[in-house]
Length: 161
View 1 (tube, rainbow, N blue to C red):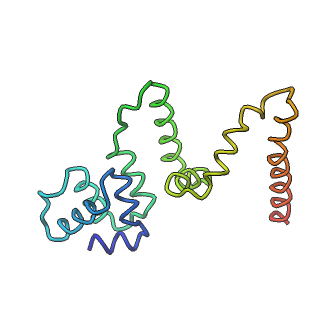
View 2: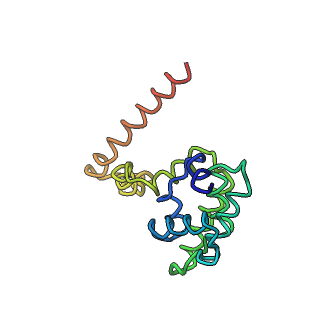
View 3: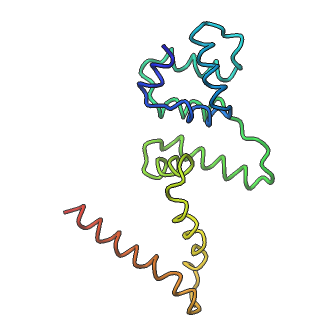
C-alpha cells in the first residue's frame, strides 16, 4: 500500500531517503517493515511520515516534501548563525512557494547536477555584475552572460507571441 502511494505520487525512494537523511537500503527496509506492520522497527520520524502518506490520500509529492521540511527535518549545527538563517529563509521560501519556478529550480539543482557548470559560472561573475569599472578580463568574463541575457529576452518575446 505504501509503496503504491509513493509510486502514484511520483516520489522516488532515493529522493525520500535523501530528504529523511537515511540510506536508500534503510528506506527500503522501513517501507517493508511498514507494509508488514512491524512499526516498532521504524524510526519515529519515518513512521510519522509513512502514516501521513497513507492517511492523506490526496497528498501529492509537493505536500509530502513540505511535510518533511516543516515537521521532520531538523537543521543540524551548520556553523555560524548566518548559515542557519540562510537555510531557514530558503526553507521558508520553498515551503511558501512550492509551485514557483524558483522553488522547483532550487529543488532540481539540489537533486541533480545538470546545472552545476552554469551555477559555478554565475557564482564566479556575480561580484562583477555590480562593479562599475571592469578590467578587460572581467569584461570578457561577462560577455557570455550578456549574450545569454539577449538570448533569453529573444526567447521570452517569441514565447509571448
